[in-house]
Image (cartoon, rainbow, N blue to C red):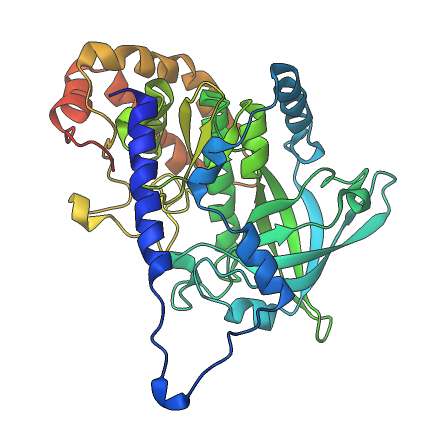
Amino acid sequence: MSRLSSVTLSVALLLLCLGVATRAVPARDSAAGPQAPPTAKPADQQAAKQKKPPSAKLADPWPDAAKLAERRVEAEKRQLFQSEEQFPFTLKADFKAVNRERTPESTKRFPATLTVAGPDGKDVTIPVSLGTRGKSRLNPRTCSFVPLRVDFPKKELLKGTLFDGQESLKLITHCENEDSQDQYILLEQLTYRIFNVLTPRSFRARLARATYVDSGNDKVLATRNAVFVEDDGDLARRLEGRSVALPRLQFKDLDRDSLVLMMLFQYMIGNTDFSIYALHNVRFVTTPAKVFYPVVWDFDMAGLVSAPYAAPAQVLGLGSVRDRLYRGPCLTQDQYAPYLDVFRAKQAEVMAAVDSQPGLDEQRRRTAKTFLEKFYITLSRPGDVKKEFVDRCRAQPTM
C-alpha cells in the first residue's frame, strides 16, 4: 500500500470514530415536558463552526511553489531565532489562577503582559494571554509551576520586537523555584540545539531569562531560565509544508529518512517520552507531494536532561532515564549505515554545542559530554551497532 493510501485509510478510520461520537445525543427527560433547544452563545457558535477534524487540512488547497518559498523565507527570518544569545523579559499575570489550571489540553486563557526590550533598547509592553500545556508537569505533585503557552496579539503590536511575526509560542518554564532548575532548562535547550545540528526538520528554541510577576500585588515570584520553542506553523513553513496533528499513523506513512534519523536522535539523548500513534510530543509536517515528516519536541524526560521528576519507561524494561532504547523501524546493519554516518559527521559540532552552552555548571557539562560520548562509542563498534539497533529492535508498525 502506498504512503498516501495508508494515510488515507488512517484518516478514514479517524473520521468514522468522530462520526460515531457526534451522533450520540443525550436522552431527554420526558417528565420535564417539552424543552426549547439551548441557545448557543456567539463564542460557542464560532468555536463549533471553526472546529474541524485534524484530517481536514489534508484537503485544503496548496499555494503555488513561489508562495511556499516566500513563506519559507519569512519563517526562517523570524527575529526571535536570529540569535542564540539569552535575553530577559518580564511576564505579569495572575499566576495563582494560572497555576491552578491543571487540566491537560485546557483552552482556558489568562490575560497577561510581556515586557521586553524594543528595537531602540527601551522596554515595550505587549498584551498577551497565557494558557497551560503539557501533561505530567500539570500534576501539582510534580511541579508547582506549570509549562505555558503564550498567545500574542495582532502583529502590528509586535513590529520591531523580538516577537515580530509570532502568534503563539510554547514556553518551557522551571518546575520549582530553585537554582538547580536553571540547569535543567539549559540542558533541554541544548538538546534542541543538538537536533538543529543534525537536521533542519527540528524545532528552533531560544533561551531567555524570565521574571514572573504576580499582577495582584506586583510581587516578583521568580526569575528563572526559560525557553521559547518555535511555533508549529513556522516549522512547517520552513519545510515548505503545513503542520498536521494526525494520530494513529504508522512508520510506513512517514518519510523514512526523517523517521529513522529522529528515532536515532531519541536514542542518542535517551528519550522514550513520545509516541507517533498517540501523537504525544510529535507533530507531522506534510508537503504538497504528500510526504509526512515527523518532528519531536519536549525533551525534559530525556536522559541527557535527567529532570528530577523524570521516570524510566518501565513498560519498555528500562531501569533509568539514562538507559537507551531504539524504537524506530527495524533495518539491517547496512541500511542503518548512512543514518549513523550523519551522526558521526556531526560529532564535532554536537560536542562543541555542549562546550558552548552558556550557564551550564561544569559538573553537568561533563556529565552531558560523557553521556553523548557513550553514544559515539557505540557507533564506533560494529558489534555494538548490531546489538543496539538490529538485535534489540522490536519489529512493530508504529509506536
